Image (cartoon, rainbow, N blue to C red; front, side):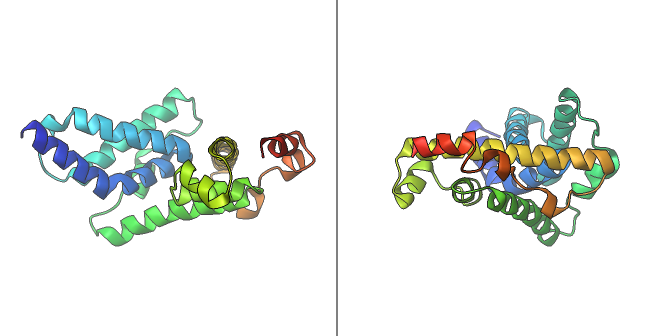
Amino acid sequence: MGKIACEALFEQWIDQYQSLILSICFKMTQDYFAAQDLTQDTFLSAFEHLKGFDGENEKAWLCRIASNKCIDYMRQAGRRQIPTEDTQMEVFPSRTGRPEEEALEESVRRELLENCRRLRPPYDEVAYQYFYLEKKPDEIAGEQGKNRKTIQTQIYRAREMLRGMYRRERLVCSQDGRKVPEKKVTENKEAEGPGGKQGRKEKQDE
């Protein structure tokens, strides 16, 4: 397979499987932002080893690469719970096709949306626009009538808040093996409310 053909095939895989790989990485790590990095690493590794691919079942091949990336990440990060073979089988899509994959992808998207909505203003809306709807900072700034730097600052802070949410969820899951109840995963509004240090700084930015 020539270079142009390899690149075209690779782009097709990204379009077709990116959401699935992201969902698998998230389910294994319980960290949306780590899952984004691992998804990128998965496709980069696949591209580097594309010549060694046997041409059969690229979805299973990509899923296996993603799984190995997640396991390596969990080990390097010193996580208490390393995904087992049973865990991998739970998140891997079966041969039944798209319905199961769509359910997995929708689950990840739904959790992201819920976490974005738990943030206090203005971070809830910025997180929703940027992370969930995948709009660019310039586009958000134009719609909200704010300058680009303000939006970028809010995106950065929203990301850190969301990271904290995912870390707390992962911690609870690692401690008792259960999904943390939705009502318990809330941003610390008392510590970072309008009267707190974070709130005062935000007023200065705007």
